[in-house]
Length: 193
Image 1 (cartoon, one colour):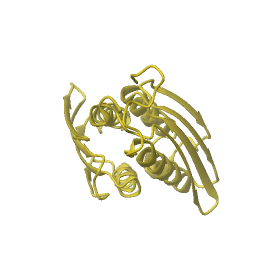
Image 2: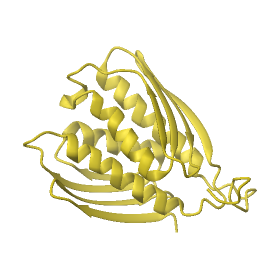
Image 3: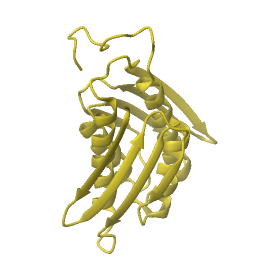
Image 4: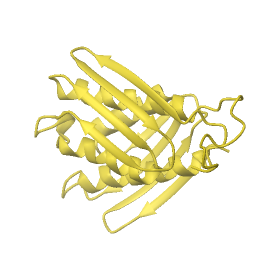
């Protein structure tokens, strides 16, 4: 199947998201946060996953709830699309440079959500998104997807650093969830993720 659609409504956000792990990289993203739309579109493209996100949030307050909740919903959709993990590669890493910036991401799609994030954005952050929300997005995604991620970002330009991180995460994720015909079972000595 490797597809999922999740709809989540709270008093702060209303999000509908669909994900196809075996897509072509098509992204249809409308979050009300233009820079975040750009990051998620890049995520879909470089992860070769089809991603559709429609989000309405309490943006007059700030972007926190919208970005956090999209991470939650994307994580839930990813966990659903991966299913029991039968046949996936599971572990992968990627490094992506963007001018002076470099992002390195190593992933384990093994059912345990955890994030180690090394790097810092300026307080103003990229595209008007407070810098701490980038890490928080990845935290929300990882803990809800059951993915362990180590993300390291260096550079001077917030835009370049953020975009490199999204691209590296997407490339590592595409490799980790790829189906390897030589792996006929769940890639774990436990027999389950």
